[in-house]
Image (tube, rainbow, N blue to C red):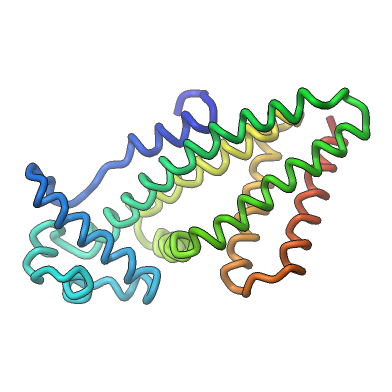
Length: 234
């Protein structure tokens, strides 16, 4: 992908998504295809990837069984297109988020004077932004995160899904890199890899456990600690 801002990367990912199933030319056909994909996603969230079967998806979508086999010749195509739709929608959402985030970050940076105290304050503010992002993901997009985890596991066995997972990972990675570049990291690529791993682990743990104030405070403390170390080395 060309070097560009995180919002541009997310947009590029959304535009690069390719579907495997039968193409549609009429609006009614596309609506039915969307119904099927949305139904498959609900099943993934509720029952996991292994719950996606033509008969189960048709029942969930309220369409004839022949409709699912018409648009998708096999389960692999159906799963690939279900996750492709997820990646496309997620990328569009993240493009808007990163575009807003960069402006906020530059405002914070402009308010500082380069002193250790100002840099510590910047680390605290960025950590709060990241903690808020993770909490919004867990509270408002929990089903999407559940589906993402299921597809990540399935991608170990399916090359088509693996390529989509890798494209999707670029969105968070480039967003993290953008944040670290703005705050002055000397090694934004490596630091972004670590920050991405921290965020993904927090999301996974948040899905395993019920949300509580103590967990939120621990999350913020970890992010503050990490960003202070990054800024201390610059």
